[in-house]
Image (cartoon, rainbow, N blue to C red; front, side, top):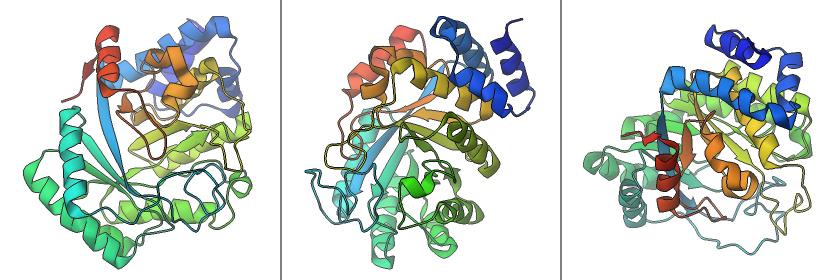
Length: 323
């Protein structure tokens, strides 16, 4: 049995990889990539078969954010030329939900920029969600920044199924990315969502100058948080942001990261998220041997590939879209 298959066995037995084992994954020689992905696929297939979950995101409020996150085109420190607008009206949010249905997405993600939603914005989202849930079978994920347990409870009662708030990076690296909120603020928001009965969604952005040890710590923290869904973003260095010159990713490394996250969180939805097309490029399809979920369509301020291309990619692999 190969070393990678031993790691797959550990994952299937519920054992946590050690830092040393994680570093072996992240630094695997490129000629070991295929057997590594095969081992990750064995874990993925055990829990999810060949199903691929599709998610669609709507940028419900753009820019106008007081936070100084170095990766984000919408932050106060960004000079990126993006659209800026307040929270979209109910009709536009509902229209987006029907577009998600057309793309065969099972989850519709309502994302708003800012530190956290106001009571008025929460009420606006609730008004739209109530109608969406009454007319579609969609799972609704809200991503509205830092949230109290009280606000999370209101969202839950309205029909929101899941709440996303990414830890983004490790606790040790967090201060290098943003200083207007703490790592603890992010963890607390995930816990507030859980306490309110919402399914927790939390993930990361890879490629922001973090160390290999940081990547392991992120995967470990998400395991401890028991996040049901883990979006793995790969940095797009946006011109006009503090991280515009960051360039530490290649497609093979991205695949190794996805394999590690599958080993570390074997039962969870691992979603290849922002930066998929830019960083995985021609190897996108291989990511689905570890991940079981992707976004279709555009992201917040960056474009994705046509959703028909995603459907074709899944079909070509012999996988199928989860109904």
